[in-house]
Image 1 (cartoon, helix red, strand yellow):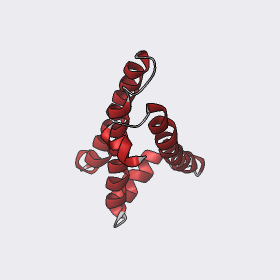
Image 2 (image 1 turned 30 degrees about the horizontal axis):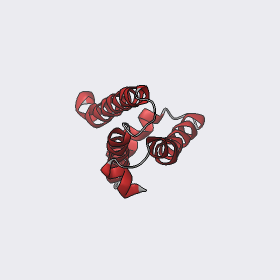
Image 3 (image 1 turned 60 degrees about the vertical axis):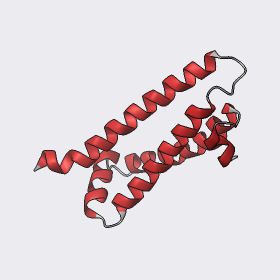
Length: 115
């Protein structure tokens, strides 16, 4: 399934629901856990990325995984029965990428802005 998704040959619903949903649920579980502990997730990410050795690599790995999913989903978006879903999917992927890149920029430039 992963190879077919990467080549854009998989049905879109499989890429969206079977790959994307677990990825997003895992991210939101971490996010909500941090929120429940009273630490704003952005502050936690900022602290751990810059002051906990290895966290920047983990952040980069998670980012690469998300970007790989976005690429596969974009490529498979045309594999639907109704063409409108291709456009809806690509708009949602674009919005998600924009949000992701904005968060990355804010987290990675925060020490430069603070100092």
